[in-house]
Length: 239
Image (cartoon, rainbow, N blue to C red; front, side):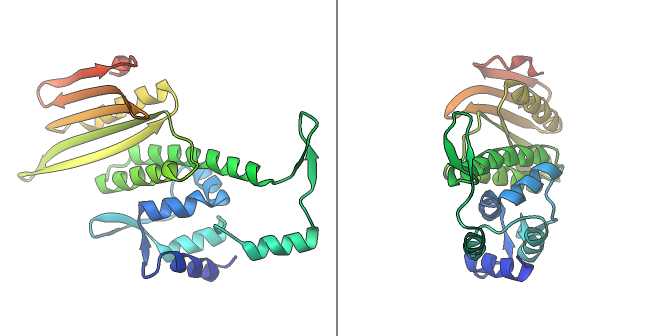
C-alpha cells in the first residue's frame, strides 16, 4: 500500500489533523500487526517526535511513510477480497489435539495482536523511562497506556507512577512518568530508576498499583530522603 493511500486513510480517520498525539497513535499502532512487530524489534519509535503547544506529537505524513515502508495499514478489505478470489478459503492445518483449524483464523490473529500490543506497550514504557525530556516521557507514558487501554487488550500486572516537583528559576514544575511491568523484578527496577530520576526534586512520590489495588507508595523530601508509606508486596528492597 502506498504512502498516499495510507495518508488518505489517516486523514479520513483524523480530519483536519496534521499531527497525531499519543492517544491517536496508540489507536493506529494497536491495529497494525507489522507496525507493532517492527516497533518491538527496534525498541524505539521509528519516527521523530514534534512539539506542538507544549505537547509531543507525530507528523501524520511521516507516519504514513513509515507505515507504507515497514508497517501495514489498519484494514485492507480490497486486499483480503483479492486474496480470497485468487486463493480461495484459508488452508486448514491440524492442531495438536487433532482438530482442524483454519490457518490465519480471526481468533489467532486477534490473539497475536493482543500479545503484541502488550509487548509494544512494555517497549514504549521502557523508552519513556530513559527519556530526559519530561514532555517526551509523558508522551511515551500516554502511548503505552493507550495501547493497553484498547478494547480486548490484556491488563498489565503493575502500573508504576512517579510524580516529581522541581523548582526552576523560581517556578515550581510538576513532572510525571509512568511505567508498566509484568514481573516483580521489573517493578523493583522501575522503582530504582524512578527514585534516581527524583534526586534533584524538592519532593516526589512513587506509587505502584496492581490493577485497582495499591501495593506500594513512597514519599521523597529534599534533605530527608525516601520514606516508604505502604509496601504490601515487599518492594522495599528496591533501594
